[in-house]
Image (cartoon, rainbow, N blue to C red):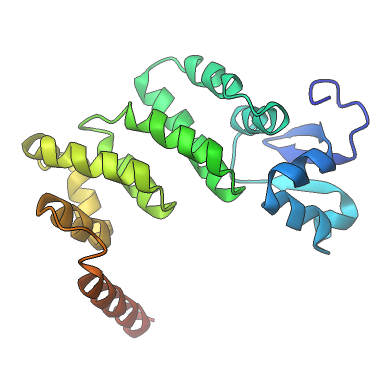
Length: 204
């Protein structure tokens, strides 16, 4: 049905391409698509969904997963990447999509695969995204890697940028190195967030 577009009732516009899809499948598999197509939003009337934050190959693979519940379509896309860095980028794109469309099973798969691709030069980028999407499995894998390869990671440009841009992640790194759980450090984390929120208001 996905490949032929037969009996489709939704058009998805992504990266200059027009993809035919079926609203019953999209709505059954993703509560986000369900709200888009049945929640009185513009898309529920036009039956047209514009995707502006994802490339066409990644989104097509995501749709194939929705139709088949089979990870092989994702694996095939990742294998087509020409090197390790490109595979990490593909996986990060899938992680973003799976989080946006509330696809918990796909996100868990993606976290596992990204955990297998952590390197000294990639760990900060992956950790930043894991923190953004509340990807706890991937966050733990990154924190463990940083603790084990501390001397190598801390001298990279990427770590310097992370330290400047993401102080809350640095707090998580310190807690993990000290073997303190986030639950135990809730007062410190909440105090940090209050302080950060206050600073943002003063800056505004």
